[in-house]
Length: 448
Image 1 (cartoon, helix red, strand yellow):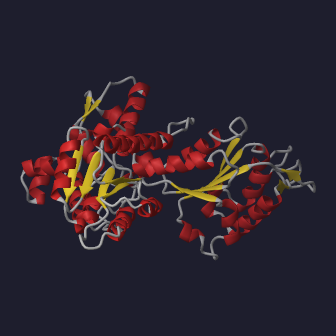
Image 2: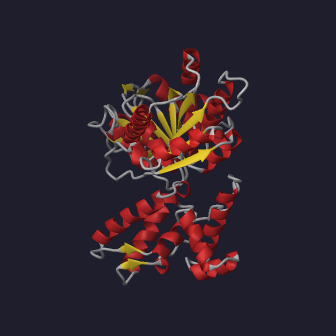
């Protein structure tokens, strides 16, 4: 990130300071917003994605203790912890400088400032942001690509990067179709065990009779159909990673058996009296929420602690913003190559209808609808008529009022109506009670 990409907010009750900083920065940065009244800070930070805020320390001309600046610094950090704040004051008190840095300020400047020093400070902060963002980028190469540029997915990738090289047991949480299996494989591929086996078991699909034989193996003659010795999945994964999918669906009895194995780190095959030591890194996944797992009547709490040294929550597709378009373009390329068609372009109506859909089936559903669109279309441009959503999936509540900001409610209303009208802008505008031009303005406003 370069300084020319920066969006900066300057807050000072001195209009001369605001004018000077606006004139200095307007040709150097992407946008400068100036504000004289500190009481507008919270709403400005909530509604804008500022990179850096330059904040005056004193707004009360009678008492220059810096306390007001510290107060607003804390308010900013509560609202957006990621924004960098430079505190600026006419009073060069070293104790105040140290205090502001401890409170979370990125830097401290004294009035009158030197322009070159201020610009250098801004460049340094933007450089740090770029380095941090690069470090947080997806560092994984797995059998299937893990794609995501949204903030929520960057958080997932950052956590993966931290925990993958460790031996910690991981619990992956998320709705069906979000890609929990890809996360598990990425953890293995970026661990010290990457050259050892990665063994996946859908334990939720195992019957009581199959659970022990599949996981722990059996000896010849252990039961009627046991015609030869067979290694269980634990033994097969020894030295590598064992991925137990749908862990939330196993019975209390199965949980007890699994807990014993995890505690002792050894298994006993059916029909044998000898224990076999196993060396595995355990990854589990479930579509249940952690609060549901915490119900002692359904899941043993001591087992939760065993499997959940670190948990990673994979966000639903509807919460991933621009990732929907990113993934759609990826799947279009994949299926265009598979079916020897294309290349394709995506019409605006296609993207709008896609963004308006709640994707209750998540990435798996998106993959399905894109494959169908590529197969069925006769054109080189995919439009809204090529998008047919499956009736199999139960629609998510696209109009849930988790976020009560007016902008969010308006955006959700627009997306809901556009989806209802299959991307038809004229019909959507009429239903919303606005003109086509007004609707286009809102689409541009919300980057839709």
